[in-house]
Length: 614
Image (cartoon, rainbow, N blue to C red; front, top):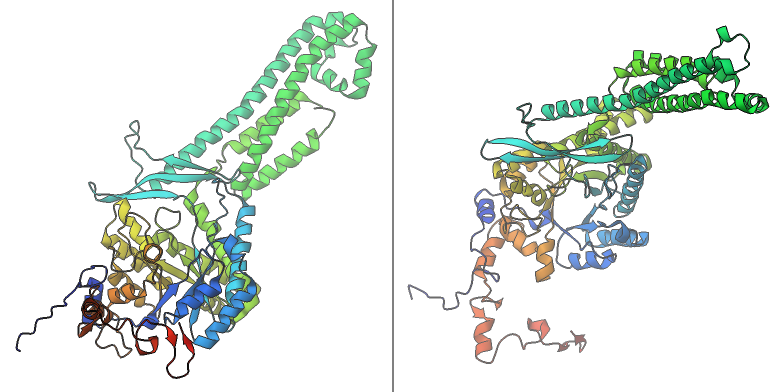
């Protein structure tokens, strides 16, 4: 026969997927075609029984597995001996392991969206503990440990791409009051009064500068209010005293000073003097003293608020101003620290006004852009974890690989990851130079080896829901590519954080991997496809290999996995189109009823040894 007809054509795959994968076609044509050994699979993060989870993955034939400890609670439920047992599996099977660390907020921001240094230090301890656990997986090498750059942190800057104006805009920002740890959201709406919009970071900083100035003036006005009230009451008391002096038996009335007189009446001696007076004189004297008591309270309030603002001013002052502030502080302590009251209200008032004038020109940065603050705190945490790890493990220190979380969470964009890795390396290198006495060049090399990025291609694809294009996603990847030590593979459609096998969404994986492998050709690609495993209960390895057009055999020649998927569709099973299972089943026969040892499904006893077969 010259024209053979296949009556068992069937579907292109058992899911009815397209017969051609653009990634598979690309891979075959461009001889990319990564081998199975280039991929890694992640285990189920919801179970503390990671030994069983790892064993199940080993049975699929993969050569690399990512152990998971996403939940701190589940991670702490895994005995340390289990990590050592997984390490023994490495020796037995040759499988490599990496580790996904717990989702911990490295900046120190709590779930209630307040920051504290205590929270940050606790995060540091949790991350270091995870590094210690991960080290048990590979005692002799530098196991890769992935940590998210943030966890449930709101975006410090909500940016989007305006299609109409063809430019990036900022919708809102977060600011932080570092003194209280309070975080606030500020919407950046165009100002009709100033005919101005806030599109750039520089304009946002100007906006915050004005807010800080207004707040500072308002806080100083509180000091001024209490000082003015105190001064007014003193004048009222003087007026009362002048009218009442005739009723008091006081010598030298011409030289009488109400403030000095008030000071003498403070304490136990003054109280005894007042009690010794006749009732009428005591009543007149109280009419003078009571207003002065209120004046002292007002001045003390002014002094209290002055002390609070002094601290803020001091933190933001230059060296010259700090010396002036210190001299003012010492003078106040010398003159006015008196538990029995203020000795001289007039002098005290003058001192409050002096302090007010001194700090007026120092405007503290009360509200800071939260992004800068968060980046500084996150890099401090990661660099400290890296340094503690290096002190303990030396050249065999686990690699701290910082992953971009899904876009929409704080510190998730390409520019954020780039800054975090660069600054973490810088701080880590400075610690090596200072404490380990390394040369600058050596410290830099160690930092580049120990600290890098895990690039999640599915997470960054969520930029699409903010109006960004495929080109923007690729360009963002190129900026991070020099730092990437690890890749997480999952696909989605840019709207929701789903995890599908590659080729089933619109993640532009080809140019992204091209950019990354320009710097790291051996980068490990970890398959994270939780949204596939849940409904279908199967590993997504086959679908991933088909999407990449990976070869079935290591020689990088036909057949490829994408061709295999097309050849054996859902209609076929067993032995393919030559002897399809369906054909024999339809006519009452088939391979299904053969013993297991001959390729069938029927269990029983071995025909050779008599041993039971399940």
